[in-house]
Length: 252
Image 1 (tube, rainbow, N blue to C red):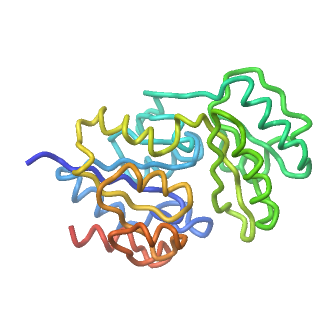
Image 2: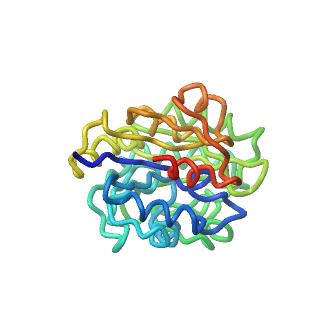
């Protein structure tokens, strides 16, 4: 029997962030128990350095989608298997919009957890010296984030994805190539691992995981998922705070 694939988000799904830094011992145990039957592929908004501790604690060996869909990586080594960058004009337009909201910092490409919480630059200080595959403005208050997201969404060739930040009451906005959402990149991932879409399970919780759900067959929403995810789901499980993903895997 051919292996199926389980494609899952990290924050709010495999880990109860920001409270939890790594997945539970039970989730690690269940992934290990099922790895002969399933490919386990994370699909996260985190960039490599931020995702690495979680991916490696789970002992993942199958390719994973990182950086909001802009990259596919080897979770053991960080080798980039596929990458899509923003075009220069789109990047300049996005930065121009961020400059209209100068008090919230911007990060791009790879970054650590410490960079996420304490680093970045103000939009007026942003200097591009390399291809940019991932751009984000972080810790934007909920009441402002929608306005910024709407402006970014008007940029041609860009996908602006609003996600729950790791600071309560705030959002992060990811700006990526419109051809590099989780939906597109998961389709490429399935080609790499040789799995048909009908043999996939997707598990997620946030708005960016709507793209994940669009790429898989059977859809599992966390109990803490946004309403839109629950409406799309074939099954709703317990929340991340209750180790819902581990409990779901116990039944497989």
